[in-house]
Length: 237
Image (cartoon, rainbow, N blue to C red):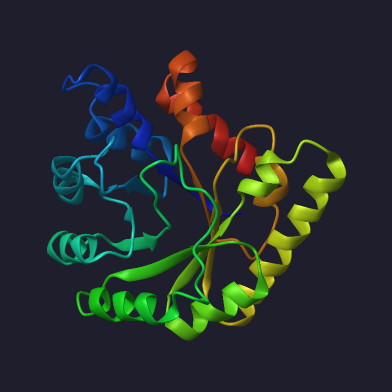
C-alpha cells in the first residue's frame, strides 16, 4: 500500500487567521508522525500566507520521518532549500491570487528552469519531485529533467462530480503512474483527496506515497488530528 505524507499547511492557516502563535504546525507534525504518517509536507509560499520561515527551520530540526518542502522554482526558494536542506522538495506552480495550487507544473515548457533547480538542490543531496498533471508528456519531461520522482495531480479526479468523468480521470492517473515507474521514477499522488475518494487511488500499485492535507485537517476539527490520520491510514490499507 502507499504511505501517507500529511500536509500541515492548514494548521498554520488557522493560526494566521488570528495572528496568534497557536495552533503550532510544529506540534501538529509530532502528532502526525506518532499517528503513522511517513512524512510531513509544508508549502512555503512567496506571500507566506500560512507556513512561515520559522516553521520550516524548526520542523527541519524536529521531523524524524521525512520533511517535504513544496515550493515554487524561484531563486529565493532554492536559496532557502539549500540552507535548510529538507529531505525532499516538491516543485509546484504558484500564483498569489490562487486559493490553493491550481493544476500541475508544465514540465515540458519549463524544462530548462526546472533542470537547473534540480541540479542546484542536488548539490545538497535533496531529492526532487515535480507536481505534474497525469499526462505522459509531463512524466517523460520529469525524467528528462532529472527529477527523482513525480507527484501526480489528482485534483481533476477529486473534483469530478459524475462517475464517468471520475473514471476517465482515474485512468489518466493510473497510466501516468505506470509510466513513471516504467521510467524508474518514484511516484506520489495528491491534491483534493479525501475520505470518500482515496481508496481507488490508494489501490494503484505503482503509487508510493499519497500527499493529503486539507481533508485530514478538516476532519481533525471534529475528531482530533491523531484520529483523523489513523482513519485515513485505515482507508489507504
